[in-house]
Image (cartoon, rainbow, N blue to C red):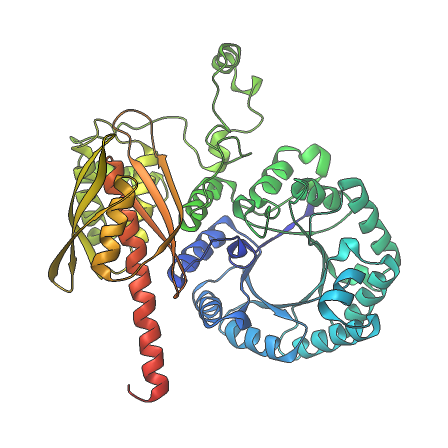
Length: 515
């Protein structure tokens, strides 16, 4: 069987999803899980685009081994220099350079003649090859490019030293039959194409990203680029978990395989959803909450007789468990540790003590704690940022005939601060009171509430996105009380805001020579 390489761009293209912003710690944890999934290439970032992207790419290069670590660069020396500087510590590294090749992009975006575009592409590849032998070239908007011109520029960059050619469907325009035809045409007309890895990067504007990627595989493409959960610009990218399981389930059709550890899929899908604040739709293929759920009586009857009647994949194959271990207030530290290990978490004694305390507090509020509750607790504990502010208490006066009013107490720098505010509802009142305490007016971009598990005592998970002059910050909160979860989520986001403000103040002081 042909081996298909998996190129993950969750940390680069995925983070370009509107409203998503990941810090270095969060990117590192996603990269660690991608390595455990056995992804071949991790595109860690676009180093020249911001100091944060550079630092995150550098941190991943320093700490992640196994996959090739890749940095994106436009076809110019400054971008390539930055990418190389960030990638240097990685055991295996790749520079990924690109330039647009469609008539519409060359004319209106680049304002360059086709000859100039080829010159820049060739120069960029040659320059990148001075640093590493692993150089990928992408022809942006390839699927809307003139085919003869596309063949010409691809032939030129191969001669210049490119080792991977990427054919992006940048705007999600092409259909599977057309894409298969384009791949065949390129294989027949690009000089030296048999010497390089052929890759595709599909967007999902028409809902065809996975279908187009699979059509390309059937024409001999050996690298697929995509993201976890299909996140990314506009309607997103190819969902890598769908490609992985399609190839795994239909080996008879594709005659291809990946080296992915499929049992890690659910864990990383959940992680990416939590950290980006992008919920997974229930009917999402492979990782949606309904993907292995059966409600119809006919389906249930078939499942009881033989699971293969209605399931073409086993839930165990993506890391889900059929059985449910009942965890509650009578469970001990050892039982909790065993269950967390089964879910893929290895904790130090200190970490176990912290999560056990939170587990016991939750068990006092819920009769039964599910695996989903434990996952949510772990994600919240792992990514709780430094607490500049801590929620002490809040009190709500609300009703359908009175104006909702919240009184909030925060501990900041060891001092208890208290403010009250009115709002359109109890959550709005809490947030306005917090804003008064910290002295910053934030714009609430997004508020999401979901039940982690079922029942009237379900653990509620709230995620918020706030914006001000410093940037966009995502906060998360967990509680069986949705108002407490809402308050904790907002305080979590505010702590990230304060951390960013302090960092900016420190950078300014350093520049002025005050530090």
